[in-house]
Image (cartoon, rainbow, N blue to C red; front, side, top):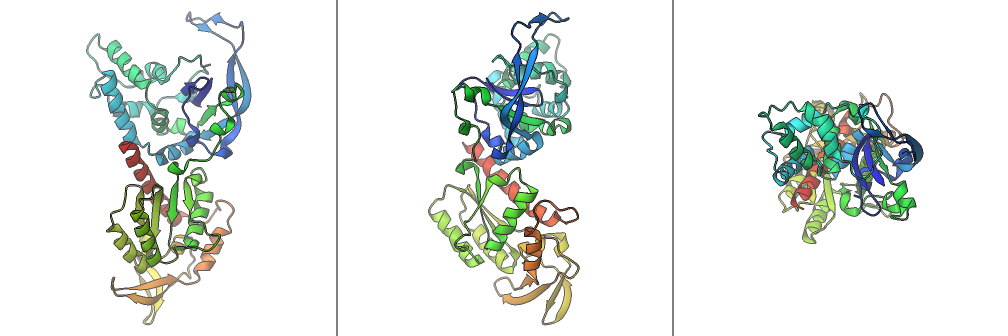
Length: 410
């Protein structure tokens, strides 16, 4: 047997070669010792409720484990959002004949956000359990559905039959809204299937497929280095979803003009990878962002610009007319400005962009701010990550929307 669980709740199970691939929920670094539960032979007995029970033996063996809160972000990057859960729910309602206006998705979402998953008893899979059983016993009573007399059993069983087919993506994504469940481990216990000779270890422990990852293209190698490092120390649980252009032999797309031409080239060859193009929030970046936004951008590509921030609306600048506090959004906010700056941070105005009727500026001593960030080996107490977090959040949401659309069209 092979099982996917969150806490003591079995979300999915399989046997021999008959199992669903959940490897994308995890990273190769998530391999650890996890509990496996086995029935003790000859230990069956009847409990006080008249139910047959068995004594359980626990062994710790290799498996994959990751907190549900982190798995949630990976599920979103695979395109399975709350909206996608809702669409799946409607589909199952139509397939299984339960009224989605009587048993509503919002009611299911609310119930799963409050059910006490940690209180469930440990179960040993015999190959016949499913989320439908958990739904009947734990979730349905929380729905508070007011049904006509004699209708409860019919509605319960038709709804539970539909919930048996609710995907693991949806079950985990909805449970992640539950504060008590979000900290529980999601465990994929695959060792028995591997040792039984039904599958090799690399079918469970491997890197993401190319179709599941995103290629981030920026204006220069400095931006790519900052973003890659930010993901490593601030979002390590999803960092493997993002690739960057190889910088070993020199960055090939330095400058906004070259990047615009690169985007044109990618569109012309119908590139199949998921691409995110990120421009700076300065005069040149804004100009090229607007040009690229007018292209016929395919569904697997997103054109982004660093976000406008309130912190940049009154920023110290220096130019021919002296020092002034000005708004640098769309004029001089390169990626280094989104790192922690000090009280001496200042932008120097340089060339004038006639197309935008705006001066282009650059942060003075930007390499010092960049190197200070890149020297960090982990999240550092006291460092202000709020601006770079805003950049990561923007990229994350863009990638989620891209994959969500692809899943919906599949």
